[in-house]
Length: 64
Image 1 (cartoon, rainbow, N blue to C red):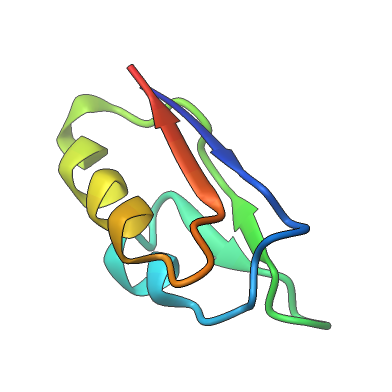
Image 2: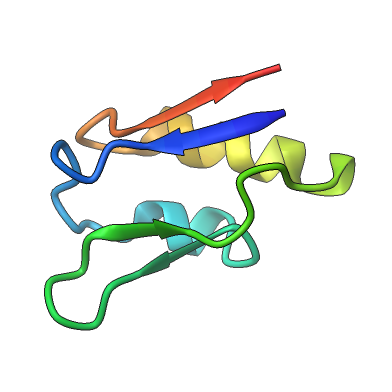
């Protein structure tokens, strides 16, 4: 799995951080998404897919 987060699309809602805190964080200054682990272990794949699905700005893309 490979994760890409489009910081231009991100609205700073933070739902990705709530769904997968080991993979996503937010910048302190504006809340924009930061990917902590672009290739997370299999144990986190479901959480990452959930984060991508619930992102209100559709800023997270996942490729297998």
